[in-house]
Amino acid sequence: MKSNRNIPFGYMMRSGKYIAEPAESEAVRQIFEMYLNGMSLKSIAAEMTVPYNADKLLWNKNMVSRILENKRYLGDGTYPQIVEQVIFDRANVIKSEKGKTALPVDNATKYLRSLIEYGNNTGCRRLSVNDIKRLAVTAINMLIDEPTLAAPIDSVEYKPTAQLTLAEEQIKEQMSDSAADADKLMVDILRAVSMRYDCFTYDDRDKTAPLLEILTQHDKIEEFDMELTKQVIKYIVIDGSTVSAVLINDKTIPIQGA
Image (tube, rainbow, N blue to C red):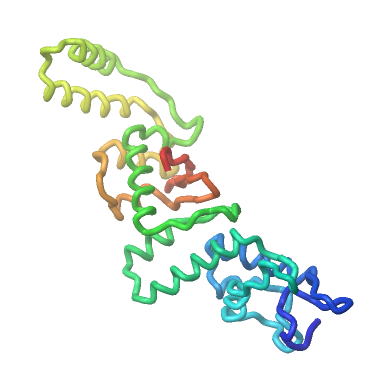
């Protein structure tokens, strides 16, 4: 273990040349990975088990920051490469953007950022507040269009009533009639939708029933609604190119068009 940092963390000297020190170089790669997965500098420092040097066994956020900014990890004529260019660049873009947001963050923004969880894929893209709003709106509108997406598998039973069957047949007749009253048709469709979801049975012991009640009684939204989002979505998971919403009843659904 080196007693100082004349040799950058991650490297060691052998036969007059710098080579990657196995444990430290792996720690460097882990730091970049954790940072890209959304962890703060302070949280990363708390995870470090490889001492920074003999005099500093514990890490702090400034040490982590220096690791993220050290271009030696990209490799040159003196130091071997430890971190790929694309990973280094992505981490430092994120770091730069965070440095620009020194102003106080309002509660809505804090909530939106807390809504996102990043997966294990280091290629996860970082989302702006507007991106998060868009994903929440998309997920909620999907569920309003098809509330049964929120039902856990095997918890749904559909038994259409005679009244619903008749209503759906009347709607089909109106839709085939070019002279049908469009306003009346829309009212009948909405009434049939309500009747349709009344025909589904759900397990009332969990959070599914109240969730479905919210979804079936709410119109599609055009703008982000924080209170509705809190009632429907627990968090949104970003894992590489995959985007999913985990609902308050722990059902996970892919967000289409994300």
